[in-house]
Length: 311
Image 1 (cartoon, rainbow, N blue to C red):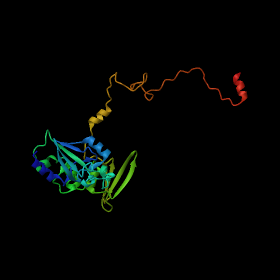
Image 2 (cartoon, rainbow, N blue to C red):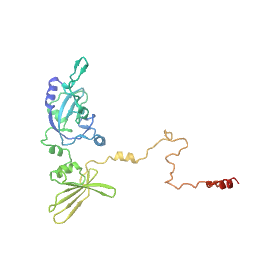
Image 3 (cartoon, rainbow, N blue to C red):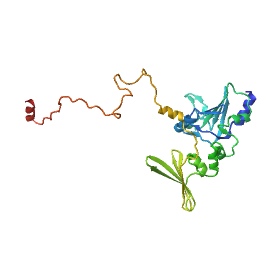
Image 4 (cartoon, rainbow, N blue to C red):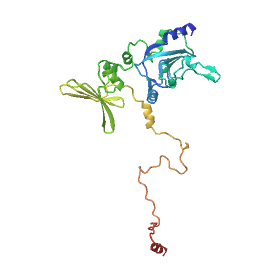
């Protein structure tokens, strides 16, 4: 890439407001984008979000704070990046008779930065690109054309969910974020328990209007109950939208027993039972052979009993 193109891209993208089209986990690993594929994704992304929390969620506004063109990829820091950089005046030192002195206070929040970054990878080197071409390559993670956070979020959900959100309708199978975009924050929430399952009921509306009871279990809508003005009750429990199919390959791996060779190393001691040996839960234990009567003698409580025992 020529120097003039580098300057044009940096000048065009730095300090630009965008809307996120993907979830960015907190931490210093960031997000990688190559040939339209975002990494991490799927189960790896869910684990990172659960462990570290989200730095940016789909539909959130974000600022590109730094652009660096490196060998084979372009580095975009978002919302200040994962590491807070010091200002130029925080690196100034004054030397005196007592040694170097830093006239400014250290940045207390340097290790508490909440930004992230995106690395856009190419095959071998960064080619000549126009700003419009670069925007098209970044479209899986950034929306440069959205006019609002709501519009950017709607572009990230399935068409059926988008239609329901625009109609302010809640579907069974939505997550809580979709419910908020569809109906807003619930005026009333109730926590209940049905057997061993804990759930949360979000209540929308008040009589004499229709009232919707949205039941949520583990961030998923499992039931929508609507009480009409005329007293009619409508309950929907059938899943109406499937967001992400379960990873059947991983579940199959968990269910299938592992095939271990006979000479595989083990932590069992010599003579210890193997896994295939039936356990007490599988069959009753055999009755142990009865030996000679070893009934313990009663404890002595006086000198007369010691004499009786000696005889």
